[in-house]
Length: 234
Length: 234
DNA sequence: ACCTGAACACCGTTCAAGT
DNA sequence: ACCTGAACACCGTTCAAGT
Image (cartoon, rainbow over the protein chains, first blue to last red):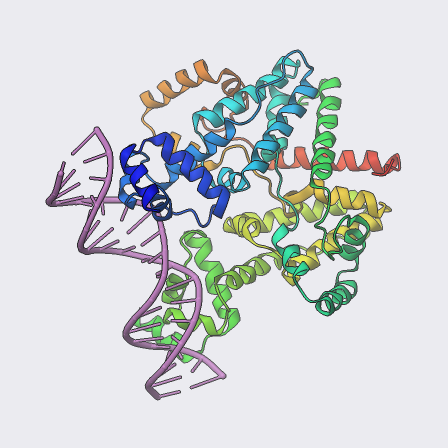
């Protein structure tokens, strides 16, 4: 504690140290618990000291997002567009999975940082290099949306089924009965899909499988449209 | 002001009035500016008075989401699964477009309210009634994700291009030149796609077209898999 | 039964001052 | 050049008290 404070005093703050500490703190406590004041405390510094290195909290978040994007593997060379896009998306997914807060940060940002723009530009380049028209590429990018970053909005998040797992058995049974009565279709689909846990809702699915299922569905669709020289004007 | 306060005193608060006021306030000022304290002020009441009608802010947000879901048109009867799903999604989209904050609220929620579950259950029912296997329906629901609610994560949001539109012409020109040098692919795709405004980034697109393009791409994919009796196990 | 007042433990950020 | 202290204008929420 005192040790850390002294170390901090010795080596002065800089933008890189602030961002690295912010990423580490968010990894540990989540994005909602990341405050300027708490970050300052970790760095052994008074809150206002941070404002010499980042303009405000928004810029801090931008810097954190850029750091995560820096972890995405570069484009595979020599592969066809479909394989290259697939690898890039799955690599982005790995980086985002290492920093669970990054998805929320990416969603909340206005997102025009150089790293975001560079990633997007390279991504578009994969389709153009594959012979896609500018027109089709544009719609394809919209259709992919956040899937470009390796994530999508899931139906229900993990927190709910974690809470369910913590419930006493009789409460779980009562919930299952209630679900069966009121929401029979959900129960059917969820029960068929459950893998490791016995949750009533559709968590405990193989997220990676679901993600690739949807990604491949879209890529196959893009391939088909490209093959038939699809155009939005006709 | 005094008038409003007196009216509020006459008719006591109840959950419905609190929720209606919250929806109206969020419509007006956005979700980030919606605070318990500000809502109380609008209702001419002290902040703590709200806590007799909603347990906390999370429950308030759940109630607001439920109110928006209540605006979604009921399922079309007698149509095939593809048309019924399409109509339902586009109706949800209309409801969400009327309340721009609802998307953010829906994303942030743990989302297990009765209204969310009921909507999801009916939605799943459309595929099952269309003859989809439980297995395929499960993956299809994951693939749709938030598209079920009529929205998807866009690449860049409107705020950025609004800011750009407010920039002086020479600054816009400088930005275009910078984009051309650094991000030529983005510029190409964005320039080809611009409709009404002259923005350098990909806003000013026809959102409705883009949404339906992606939705139909997925529905066509689902139809194809269903037709070939696709199963995840083989 | 319903509402209030005061308080607690937080936020992000500005401003003037220190070294 | 970099950091600090005090302050401002906010949050959500608890608790004991009022009517």
